[in-house]
Picture (tube, rainbow, N blue to C red):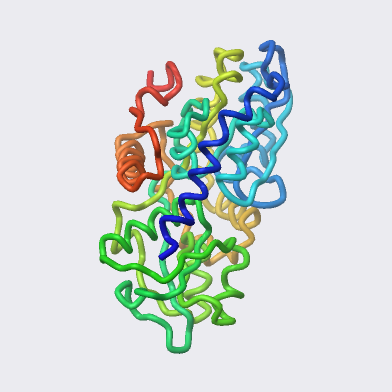
Length: 328
């Protein structure tokens, strides 16, 4: 079975990251603490900010809120998955990154010098679907089968956890980006796929049979997002954490007060039909505070799983990872 080996490739990449530091220059956006352009890394395409921070940017409210930290501009860089983003972050090509909990935890456990600033999303859903003709109908029937997911993501972690709980060993777990996964499923290249909620809803609407839903069948494996900053950037910009957290609070308030407009924004950025966006973008997933008990509990659970399975090589306390002053 290639499950552990393939996930381990992500770990190996993370373990190699600290060595990159010796050949890199100082952060361009924070070496002196002077007013600067903030470089933000995200998962996706088109160099677009999503979530409440993206909503603020779309409403021309982001820069005024970041101004107290000396930020005069924002540059956004998209990456296809977490491990790729981690490489850019450790190479000091980014100041801040907002992505899933799993790749951020793996990188920190491998010694990448980041600090956790906030969790912008909590309770992210995912699910497993099968091919239409003669596909598996349960997790048990995935034994020996070929399953696809976007590796290094919280969906990958959910898939591994669900399979482990069921005592199931697939024949292979292959890496396919979410944007390409339906084509592989339709061709029959894979027997089943694990995808985030919006992709799940779209595939379900297209007639692909549902095998498992995280929120219903494995809520302990719901995902969260992590917003992290490089230690060098945060050290050079002492007031940034508080400013960012207040910005997230303001973005959350604005989104919840204008929910239909926020859904319209989310649909345009995500590229999904309005009914799919409405079904999968939930108020409950947007925490009012940068850290909540639920969010930290899910993060701790994910870390313990990754440590137990050997994907996080060196355990660490979340309190030691969270940026100084970020919890009050």
